[in-house]
Image (cartoon, rainbow, N blue to C red; front, side, top):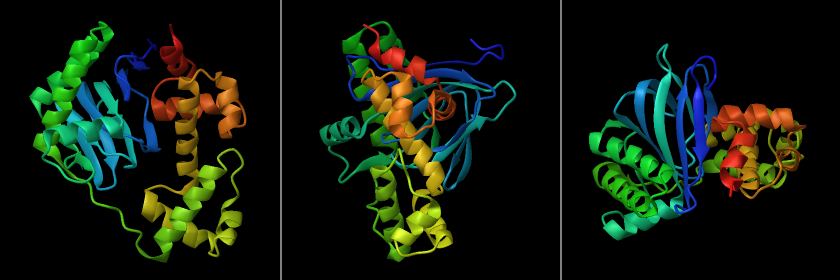
Length: 275
């Protein structure tokens, strides 16, 4: 535990594939703008969390549930002097789609229609998933997880809209993203990237921000951290992962990874490679 009372555990339970768990108390830590491949289901257990979303900033207090869909850019920070504590579940898309198919009330890609909601039943179940996983009770953890997801989808779920490519700007942004994904370790400069796509740096910057909610360099850092997470989960040493995804050295990965994920990469790797 840090001197200011901060602590965090970000881990996976082997019996629940497709799910990450985070239990933490943050005071000074602030998450920069980032997005997740999967979903976020969190309940605040103390203090206040402020979440910056495309539609504005929302505040969640004890007992509230925060719901974020895949690829939604957001920030998070303390909204009170004592910080905030929370239990978070990060289910992947497959798991949510599987539960949605079983309950049969949604068509298309399932998602959540609210950002923050007072839902005592869901808050209790999210905490119970953590408790069961930490106790090694696979039957309870999997059962409660599915009950929690089904309940949240029934009460606060809907079909996510298909994102059409709107105009030349969005199409250019999508092409730029593809280039950056292919060249995480050696990305072009903004000027080089714009020239290769037949546009200007400022036009590309504006189109990328409008399409993905963040400028290209912020998106690139987030993408590098996502790729590093996969490497670390597979057992890759931290220093090797740093170089592979394009950070100049391990300290740079440590800094960005800790800011975005909430724990250092070494701790993240240990929780996933422990026997």
